[in-house]
Image 1 (cartoon, rainbow, N blue to C red):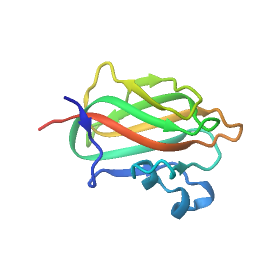
Image 2 (image 1 turned 90 degrees about the vertical axis):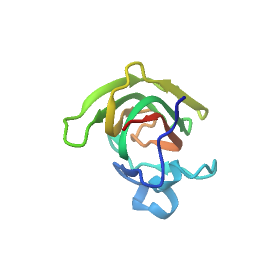
Image 3 (image 1 turned 135 degrees about the vertical axis):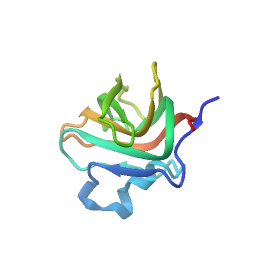
Length: 141
């Protein structure tokens, strides 16, 4: 049974934060379970979120909620082991709306880090707004 792989020891990084205002738009707001807060990227192409897990995991599903008008149109999920090169795990194509969207991962491999690349945005300036992000799967030993 798949469960959330994001825990207090998961390290996250983002490509940018709107006006560098991490107090209002920081990455932590994707994981706080509060529907009023969000991560808001600055403008520009190829925004991303990366997660490093405390142990190896097998990813089976990605859940994400954008703000309509600020969603990604094309996304790429990449993964790698601690010392390995990054490889593309899956491409996915979110809808431009504010609902929670789920993307099953067809062939999950064991990874220590993942990176979600938002290749382009519905926003003219390339901004991405994410209200919630969750990665489901299993821990491996």
